[in-house]
Length: 167
Image 1 (cartoon, one colour):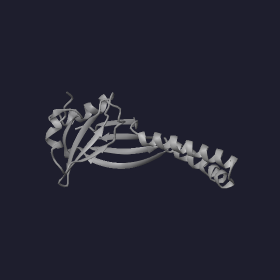
Image 2 (cartoon, helix red, strand yellow; image 1 turned 90 degrees about the vertical axis):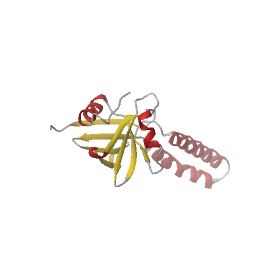
Image 3 (spheres, one colour; image 1 turned 45 degrees about the vertical axis):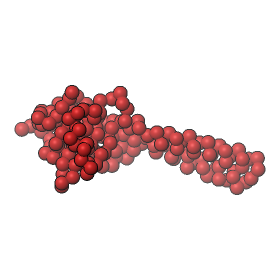
Image 4 (cartoon, rainbow, N blue to C red; image 1 turned 180 degrees about the horizontal axis):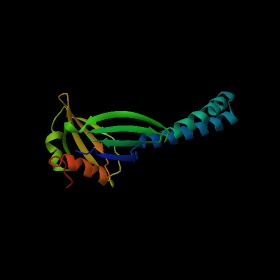
C-alpha cells in the first residue's frame, strides 16, 4: 500500500486565560508606573521592570498545533510564536478505535469509560469541524481532539473506513 501524507496547522483560539493575563499585566504595569511617578521610586522601579516582563508574556502567548499524518503514524506538535516547534505526541493509527465529530453519538460508548484521557489539540472554535480520535494503547484509552482538513480525513478514511465517521 502506498504511503499517505497529510499536514495540518491549526491556530489555538481557546486561550482565554492568556487574554486575561495580558490585560492584567498591562493594567498592573501602568498602575505601577503611574503610582511610582507620583509617590514612590520603588513602584516606579518595579513598573520599569514589569515592562519587558509584560512584553515577553504577551509575545509568548501565541501557539498553534501541527498534525502530521505519515502512513500509519500521527505526530502532533505545538509551534510557539511561529518559531519553536515541540513534538507533543505520536500515535499509531493501528491503535485507532474510532474517529467521529466531537458531538457524534458514536463516541458515547467511549465517554462512559472513567479511564478515558482527553487531549484537546484543536482551535477550540465551535464553528470549526472538530473530530475526536479514540486511541487504545497499553490498556488505556485516549481521546484526541483534532481539526483535520478534508485531505487528512480522506487519508484516514481510506485506510480505516470502518471506524471513521463523518456524520
